[in-house]
Image (cartoon, rainbow, N blue to C red):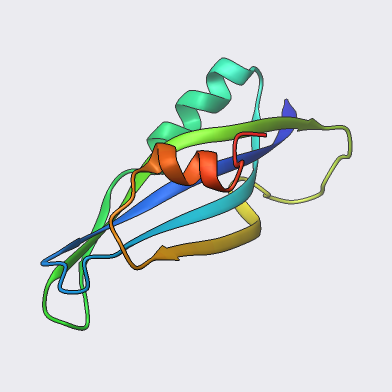
Length: 110
């Protein structure tokens, strides 16, 4: 089984959205899989929509947008490393913006 570093983009959907802004999260996770195809399916199955009540009494949903990059690691790790987060940053915007615009603006797919 191989170990991959997977860069993922998540999107926050807030209803109602009184500020009119948008937040995305770029995160890098370690994932074990035999092939890239298995890896991609495993990521899609892991990142299902997660909805919760926010501080304003509305609903916030975190949604998987896309896999930005996949890198196979050559190191071996002891223990369970599946979906361990090694990097994350939030990308808040004061206006509505699409995932494709964020990817282009921050060169996330490179």
